[in-house]
View (cartoon, rainbow, N blue to C red):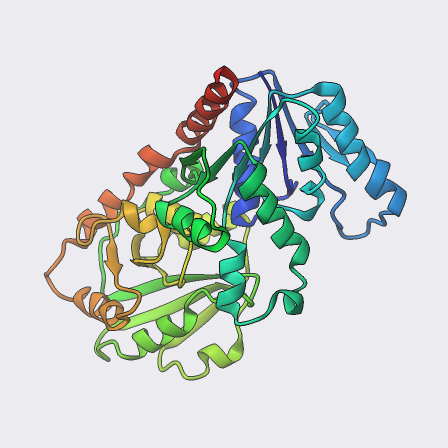
Length: 369
């Protein structure tokens, strides 16, 4: 089987969720098949000048040719020459649009992993398409929905939302989750005390995405004043969002995996309150470390969490429930050490070896059919 993954390949370790999925899946698939390639484009990197000719015809190879940066035409020529069985769009980037022309010429099966519903996110931002310059991205999403052989969603809710927006029910789709690196599971430390809560909130690098920080601030402002806690916000922050907080806030820059694990070792709780999130991999990683999740019903990972067993789920429309969960942390209502240990079990379902096996099985089924 010849497999080509296409998307943005980040050679560093400061990764977004979609970049992490691409990189980890590629690593695992190489263990299963000899002919696995990752094709990426000439994205801008510091101190590198990229000409128009390079963006069209350029080619740079890494790892004995298994990773290749290619211009648009050079990428197309690679596909014509190699004729892969599977082309898998692992994260959506604009340079991928011409790939859909290839599909009409050759018989490769085209798979796409949908990390988000772009049209929905733009609507949530309150801006129009032209204001955000997302027209090419919307064109790509439309092509993915209408002309892929199989679409991989994270939740049924994501699939239903996509159908509602585009009015098309994909003939072939699979539900498949993100994976967790083994290093997070190996970094477990038993939580022995809850007198001082260290709460983590991931806000990412794009402030145009509303991850629910305002809801968290308002909810934590209402926590019983006798409870001692601190909120750590990872990523960019709008100062206006935190100026009314009546508790301690520490802002942390985005980190590599190694630094993130060190930072998270003594934290108690991770909160996810995005109005819509397909599958927050950061929360899953925290759970593997034994950090207790508190997530809203609108997040895909909530399907793995049972309140009082391995974390807590609250109604996104009732933020007072988030406040009550924090208040309960200083009572005997729950055994938090046991909840912490139970949270780690998510790794057995979401380790990358298992997730990559699921993708590999999907590829085999497409070729057989």
